[in-house]
Image (tube, rainbow, N blue to C red; front, side, top):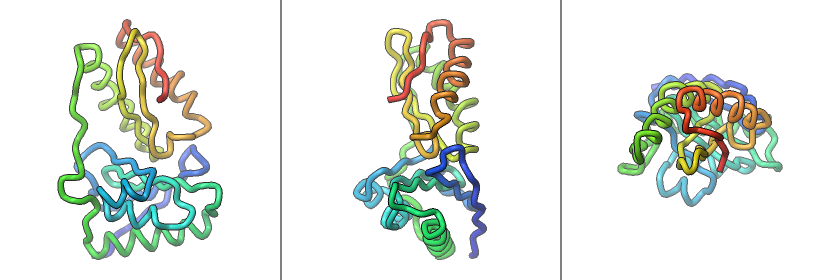
Length: 183
């Protein structure tokens, strides 16, 4: 069955988002920054990481975010990425290996649960629209530590998103939050 792929620009000039008309993951996202990690968990990510110039791949519910390294040129990379996505998905090949996908499991106390709820319901869907993802790392002494992934990692506007958007929203809803930082 043919797959429809739509290319979208992201705020990060080193990252493009490829939206597909298929469900790739049941929820959340998987981020790959090494070929070894991709080979272990995702045949699709492994193929994409094998393209010369690709530095990172993030799989989302219905999209793939590709980040290029310094040696990559979008004209050449885009053709290879589109061809690889089309061939892999049209052939019906597995996106992730069996048992490799694990949905995020809630942990921690009441404050952590409230933080994760806001991230899951408000923040993550918004950043996913730009091909990114934000993962809760921990909450310590009033500081929320988050991991920026996909187009959010290394994006010039990610600091503004983190401070003006996420930090403001969390501080508004949860008085115990004093600051939000990226790890």
